[in-house]
Length: 108
Image (cartoon, rainbow, N blue to C red; front, side):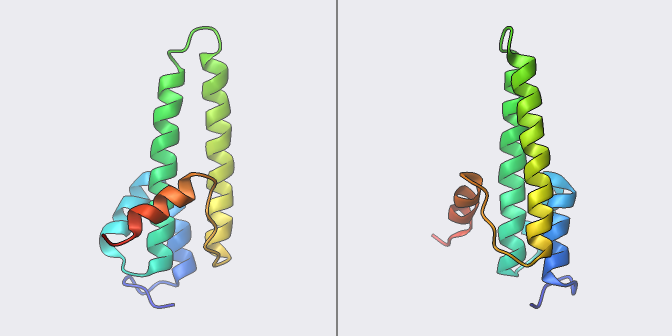
């Protein structure tokens, strides 16, 4: 698959996850390949949402720290799965976040 940066699409997909939302945003701005753009959007949406959720859970009395730890474990698991699936060349959608990312990429 052809990409703007000249790297293989699966490598750029991995980069979208490897550097978290920052890598996703950068690739969204410069890349035209649909595979890379999907993984960049999914990475951006997923990790910004989880970052916000972890931050909010810190302020929940009694169980907030447990919730924050759980959100962080989910983030690590999704990060690993995202890297693996992108490297394998799959359009793998995370639950909820994948649909949201796909809807944000659709033209109006």
